[in-house]
Length: 346
Picture 1 (cartoon, helix red, strand yellow):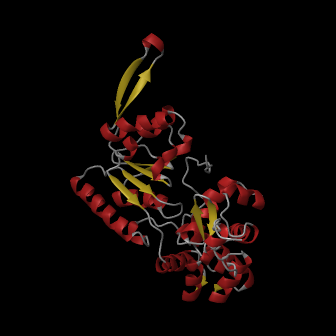
Picture 2 (cartoon, one colour):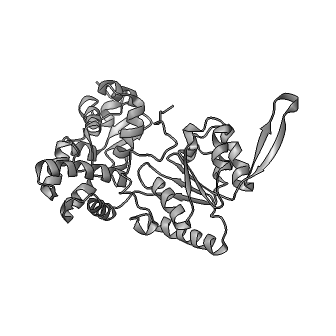
Picture 3 (tube, rainbow, N blue to C red):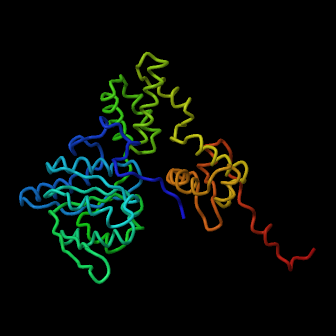
């Protein structure tokens, strides 16, 4: 089983400086269709003076699931409470948050696919009927007390929608998948966030940073912070295209956005394993790394950029992967050499 990072009850601090995170959907760049659908649902709920339906966001990390969880309560003018799925070990961990919810408040659960089964079943009645069943006492003296909850909106975020059970998934009235961002959208995000960080940046530099950010705003923000530090240390605080290239070269981030570990993986596959096919365990052993790290953190981007393929026989470097390292993909062997005609006279 692949390992995942441990989450806390607080909003995730690793991705965005608070001042970089949009507070309203009008400030968000990208995800236009998702924003348009959410605006309709929010406006309708406000006109009815009713609670907004439960919302589920899924997609890779860093695309804005937590940002939406900040913006939607602001659009509804209601407070929000943050929880993390792995921290909810038993129903008693969820009860305080549910019973303290105010009318129409938003409850956000990050990595909701990691909520234990017992807690998940506790959510069913809370989401549908806005009530929970409390068991008071022990043994033969135990009795069940039905407690009504204030109508609330549950926002769930997951990077693995396939791990959600059907009953939980079906209780979300609104389900949205977040896509990767275009180069133009990321360039705008880099420019806006550079202004928030009080750093001068030109259009070509913003485009250079965006092009190496894996189509992900969180990565773009991290790249921008590093380039900012480099510019303030080596270039009088002004980010030009040359400064951005020099900073990213020092960080060993290439033109496609591959970092040191990505390049090591590709070099191991191409030069050590002859381009494959080879298993992830073999590559991990050669790199002295964990196979889980390769599968969860490194391979997704290499697959998306078509540098490698996963086949039934193992990982294979593509023609594009060979070209990126300046090597040529070996020619496929001639079938006649592999299976010579045994009836041919010698």
